[in-house]
Amino acid sequence: MAVRYSEFQKLNTEILAISVDSVYTHKVWNEIELSNMVQGGIPFPMVTDENGSIGKLYDVYDHAKGTNLRSTFIIDPKGYVHGMELLTSPIGRSSEEILRQLQAFQNYTQTGELAPCDWHPGEKTITESIEKPGHIWKEWKPKNYN
Amino acid sequence: MIVGSNAPGFTASAYTNMQVKSISLRDYPEKWIILFFYSGDFSFV
Picture 1 (tube, chains in turn purple, red):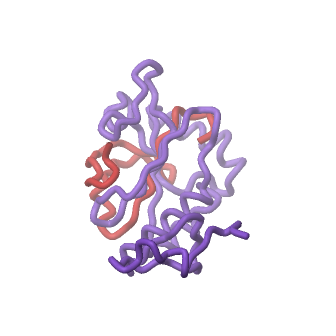
Picture 2: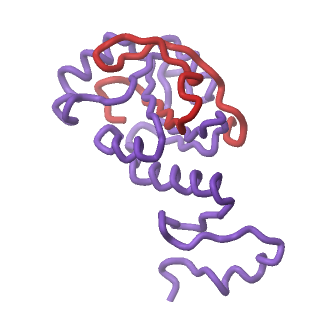
């Protein structure tokens, strides 16, 4: 997320990272480790959720472990939550996929155009219409369709 | 399940630009927000 921060910024987007760790732990982690992975260290706020109260509000708090689950929320400027992803701990999230979803939601809120399966920016979107059901196959096919 | 509804507001301390600052979702009225939770520092996210 941090190495692609400039791409998020170009999309008028701020990133907020959040865990149950204190701001002091965030500081030390950034100083001794993350700054060796990302030039200049983490460029966005590392928020502290010390008693998990924010994780509970978002329903991603793991009561047994006392930590928040790996999850990503995409929120528009009006505060509307367009999407979320939730993963167990072995697998890291995909900044690529988050960027793709963000651009699909931004395109939808600006144009009303729908993003079909595997859509990427610049590709064909679908215009919503009562005429469409049953006829989508005439204008759109899955990417690996033979 | 909060997808399809408004994001719960919060205010909390954050470490940013080598400083500790109070952060609220309301601080970004013009921006899209990627809010990402992770289990803990010194893990991958």
